[in-house]
Structures are given as structure tokens and as C-alpha cells.
Length: 248
Image (cartoon, rainbow, N blue to C red; front, top):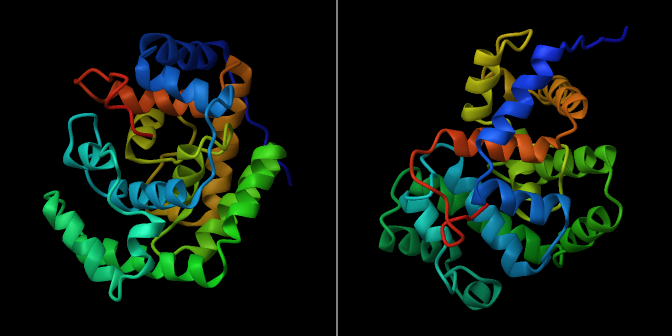
């Protein structure tokens, strides 16, 4: 049995319109990193930063003027491979940094998940870097999905959305996107053939099904899904994105 997505001209125009209407710094940054592959750097510190971003933005505001965004834009970023190397209690170390930056929402879970993941990454000698480098050198729809699903299984606190957010933030994906509440809202208003919900999207097969539909739509509109994602995400923010407050 095979599903056929029937896409009409009006559907294609809606996708093009959202991209044209939100041609901002956030979207242009996404094109430079994820499409043109500029300044891709796969390091331990960038992996840590992307992981923290995924956990922090999972269920709280992350617009350009949010506390989360300001924290993720800190230079230097306070949580690095070197900073945790000789720390006895990584969970408490991370918790205190989050508290110091007024990030208290889900602080216990975020600290627990991030410290557990960091220990696992160290235990496996950061083999994740090799997998990320492979995707960077061998980009394809299948490789993106395969690695995203692998990360979902390996990283605590990561579902299908967070695993794709992680790869997208590193500039490694064009097709697999994080289907978050903004994308869900936009697609439901757009008239996606099935009513979307965040609960159902936690199931990987359902996530694949919806992602296939998004990719088909974007292909017809000649727009990469990662660009569509940036356009929709930024369309919900009233504050302008600048070169300084673009994080992911």
C-alpha cells in the first residue's frame, strides 16, 4: 500500500508565500548554514551547545528576546567539554549555570538529561562526531532520517523533534525538520490533510508520515524543508531577528 500526496497549485503558492514574507536574518542564516553549508563545524563544544539548545527549547519560549535565546548566545558559552572535564557532579554544575541565567523551567529534567548524555558521549569516546561527519560528507534524505532516528534512540530527553532540531542546528540537514508547535499550528491552518498533534508526533512512524508530506510539499514549491521551517518559525515572532540574536 502506498500513499499518494495530491498537491495543488494553491498549496504550492502558500509555501512560497510564507518563505517570501519572512525573508529575514533567521531564514537567511538557515540558507547559509543548511543549504550552502557555510561555517559547518562539528566539535564537542558545538555538539554540547546544540544538545542544550534542544533540551531548553523543547517546551519553553525561544524567540529572539527570550531568556533561552540570550543564554544560548552567551560568548563564551559556559558549558563546554573542558568546563565539565573535571567536574564531579555535572548535573549540579549545569543546574547552577541555568539558575544563574534565570532558566528554571524544567531545570531538574534538563540538568539530568544533559549530564547523562554528556557522560554517555564521553564513555563512547565521542563516536557521535564520526556519524555527524559522515552525514556532512554524504548528505541525503535517507541519511538525514537514519541519523535523526539513531539520535532519538541514543540521547535521553530526545524525541523525533529534538533529534532533528539537533542536526538542523549543526547545519547538517535540509530535509528532516523539527515539527514543533509552530509548524503544527501553521500546517493545521494551511489545511494539511490530517489534523496534527504533538502527542501523535512523538510516534516515529507518524512523524515520518508527516515529514514525508512536508518534504513533498516543499519539493513541489522548490523550497528546502529547512528553509520552510525557518520561515514558519520566525513568522510567529514580533521581535526582529538580527545577526546577533540568531541562535539556531
